[in-house]
Image (cartoon, rainbow, N blue to C red; front, side):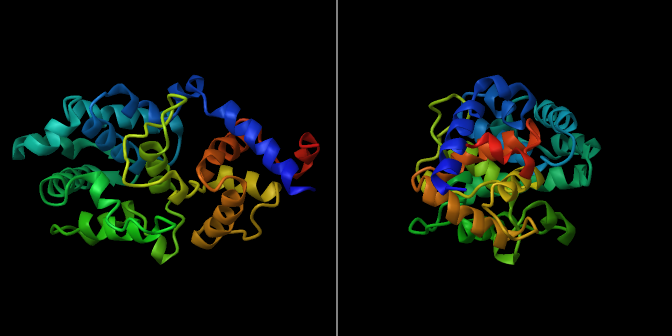
Length: 263
C-alpha cells in the first residue's frame, strides 16, 4: 500500500467529515450555542471533560451543565455564590459527580482570576512541537486549590502515559481555524501544528486498519506514533485527520477488509 494513496484517501475523508451537518450529534454542538470567547471555551472544556460513553447521554449531560449555570457559563464561573454551587451537587454523568462539577467551577474561576484564563494556562510554553508539557502544566494549575485526590482522574496527563483524548479534542476545537464552521479557532497562542489527534477506540481502530499505528493500546506511545505519521501528511494541520479517522471508525466501521476502498 502506497503511503500517498492513504494520504489522498484521508484527505478526502477529512474534507467530507469536517462538515456542520455532523454537529448536532457531536459534543462540540454545545459550545456552538455561544458567541463570547469565554463562554465557548468554558462550555467546551466542561463538555469535553464528560465526553465518554453514549453520545446522546453526553449531550444531555452537557445541556444540563449549561442549564445549571444559567446558560451563562463565564458569568457563573466568575460571579457564583455558595448557594449557586449547591445547585450543582445533583449533577451526575457516569463517574463525574456534583462535587466534581463544583470543584471544576472553583478551579476555573481560579484560572481566570489568577492565571489569565483557559487559553493562557494551556499555552504557557510556546516553543514546543507538542502539547504534552502544556497539558501537564495546565493540570498542575487546575488542581492548585484544595481538592479530593480522586477528582484528578477527570483531567488526563500525557506525561503519565495517557493519550489525553478529551483534552486533545478540546484543544482541536479551540485552536483549529473555523473555516468550515466546525472548530472555533479562537485561540491564537497555540498553533494547529502542535496539536495531537484525539485517539480513542474508533480513531485507533481506523488508524490500525490503515497501518498508521502498530501499538495495540490507545495510550501516549500510540498517539506519538500516529502523530508522527499525520504530521508527515500535513505538518501544518495534522489533526484535520481526526475527522477522517473518527468518521471512518464510527460511521463506516472501517477495517482491514475495507482497504480496497483506497485504490
